[in-house]
Length: 268
Image (cartoon, rainbow, N blue to C red; front, side):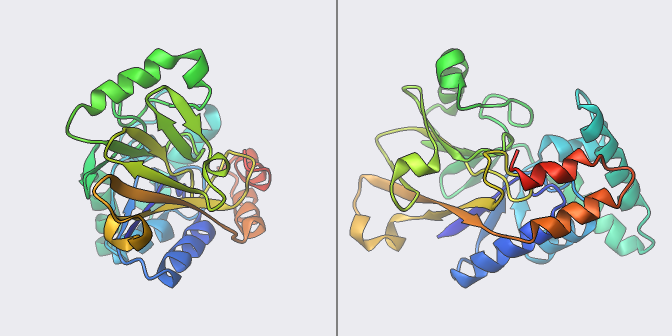
């Protein structure tokens, strides 16, 4: 059993709530699909929490933007990236500053975890490509091309980037967590391929303001389903956190646009 988080976006209140829930469940292994920083008010604290827990992460487009340049970003995202970079550089303690930059600089584009491929965006373009739920109708070839990229080495890929949780199938089809089962679980078998979006810890965009992440139950964790056909059970989890506190922090930082805070109140 392990957890996958994504798109924390410098939201320490959301990250802390999620990690506390993970601990309550007795989950000891946590991985991240990127975008630890960007948008939010607490990049240092979020990086420190993941470093201290030895959470391995692939790189997201905002992580790369802070380390290099925010290319093709809107104005709000670009301003947040430059502010985040300055905050990282302003750290007076050299050891702390270096370990944060080291984490950002050493994150790979792809990572394999228990047979699952983890990327930030998509199997085809791991850092920047958006896979939207409506693509199954408006651009099915994009979804099918990403399943082709999975090849024979991986049955499933775990992503973030859009901040909207759910499961893509190679029909193509998309299921939101509420459409899966009453318990928001998806049974991933060895007979099919899937692209699983874990949603966002720090900036959900599915009109649900709660932080989102997944717990992956491997066959040994699920005695009622333990058979050779079952690859894993994906459990989608939503956790409440102090959204208003995060919003107040963002509104108090002139370099961060107010919209980056107020959008959290609507989950958009």
